[in-house]
Image (cartoon, rainbow, N blue to C red; front, side, top):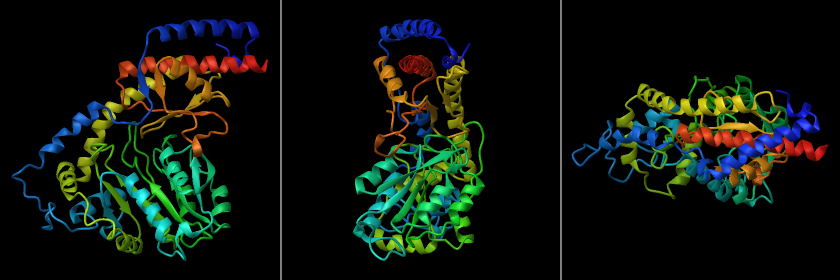
Length: 427
């Protein structure tokens, strides 16, 4: 079949008539399908339920170092949990804090404390500046951008490709403007592109020479073990920062939210030993201790890094048919037609569809009218504004395959209709 861009006006009209007939049939089906958020499916959560059985009323609730998980204390988390999740994160015991259920919660806490009191090396709190800025790779994660918006932080958008964000642009801002205080990164199987930062990008980030001596990279490694088709290696940013003489420049975050249970996992934080001591000096005013019983439950359920790998293989077995379904429908319906392209990540939770410029909003309108809910256009950019109106995020994880396939068929039909409408308007 020809690309729509190469068709005559009559050919476009004929193709559109066929698509509109299909579209009306979908509307008549009164669908209610959701591919909006990257939630684990019920099947994935059911697979983790045995974790609930590792602790009961007869359990010895002390970790192997003798700390009673039921009581106060261990502000940085159970030592056994710090060792376990530090190994996963790539940090030593003295470089690791294990916290509550959510890493995004601790990211917010770190940012909030920086605004109120500054970070290690700050001359003054970030909130005392007239304006500060963050580097925000795009397309990116809406919750990162939302935090900046909440705190009134200016966001510098930097385009991302298959290797990571544009380092020339990042250097220009970070190394010449002392009000650039931070940067967001999802370095592995990123949300939403699914790319993993190349060794070159990681090394260049570690070797930045920031104008602000209190500049921090917020390294949100949410999908560190979430491979579906195969693992991709990511350099340890903290190790690279140490080699570059910038050991304090990075904050590393991870969690078990999509390893165990999304609503009751644990978060962990890695940084230089100096940063950990400084963070401890602030956190001690925030809490007496985290939920150590949950830490104990996780360590005893997962047992070893091999245990984590086994759990993630089971997740991949559940997720792979769903990603396959998305790729299968998009390829069958859209390949070579000029109605958009899409990513093919090896892991993570998302597929990104790159529509023709100026059509993402229209695609979403058409999809919504058919009873299919997606993450809204613009969610991949600060202030929910994609200047090219191009990016749409597809989250295959939650619905079963039998619902995902019709949702993607609706999506593909809508992408084609929007493409033809745009071509007709330009004619």
